Length: 325
Length: 65
Image 1: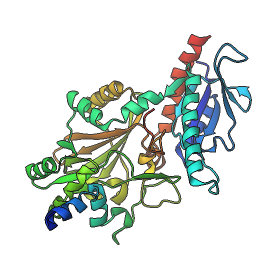
Image 2 (image 1 turned 90 degrees about the vertical axis):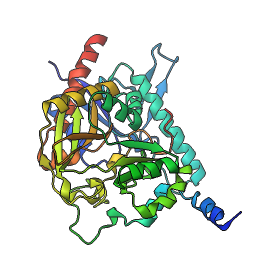
Image 3 (image 1 turned 180 degrees about the horizontal axis):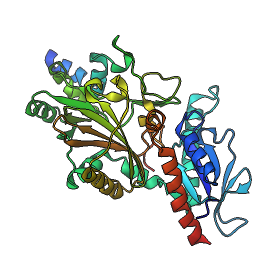
Image 4 (image 1 turned 30 degrees about the vertical axis):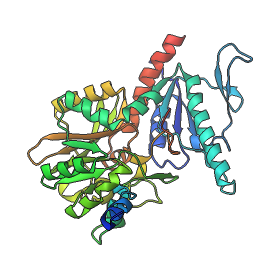
């Protein structure tokens, strides 16, 4: 198979690892790689969309030249990095407009193969849907209550003997260092009076799951690359508290099969899945982040995730190119 | 309005997540134990692992696309 495909990588200037790994793997396979850092639009990156003008077919111009792309890796689409001296109201309006313009430009690459299409990524982020579909497929999930009702939250807390965690579905804010997240918290009796605050903002409550291991599964087009952390050293939220090191882990075939079905139903070829392995060996699905981080698994365990993404982009992108010619 | 109701009304203005943030130790702030060993690939961020919240196509609270 010819691998002279033209592959666009959408990222941001400060993305520290993954983009370079995918780019390197693509280049090693003979592909032509174009990395666009979305936060440099429009201050440095010159893009134009032409529709109904000069050419019958709508097209996207990069630095004045038509952009011909076979496959797109949509990793990060960040708001514009603009001069802080621009008044805040103007800057925010400009960032909104720039991001909306970028999203619109992706439509002009409509024949290219995407990992993953923007609409699929947006739909795939629906955590309620993730849990519903996972359960329907036979995956174990934590008992879950998503609510704005303080009484319902109290009842859930009591029903699970006070072993309940609370979490949000979105980040608290955003900076150029990434999102500002709320670590998953164990709810305590002393917190119950404050549940009235659910009338301001709903939350997700789940029974705390005892853990032998916490898993992060980097999923690439049907392949699973798994890292495990010692559950005893993870704290409540391993992203913030763990002192464990990643270790290799193999998913049981049946769990792999169910995760594959889940990702297919969610319309995702890539994603970072979080699971817990209980002390009794049960695998409990928590969630999937369509653009969750996997760099540490490649860095620390040598898992060839960037290469797998390159192969998937070329495999599918080549088909797209073949259909077009 | 009774004092209790007034207090509840005031409490209701504090989102539960904000209560959790203020009432419990921030696990990301460190507890004196061993430092997390691997979380973050971003050099400015040595403990947290923000990339999961780094939504690919949002950042301005605009998710309706």
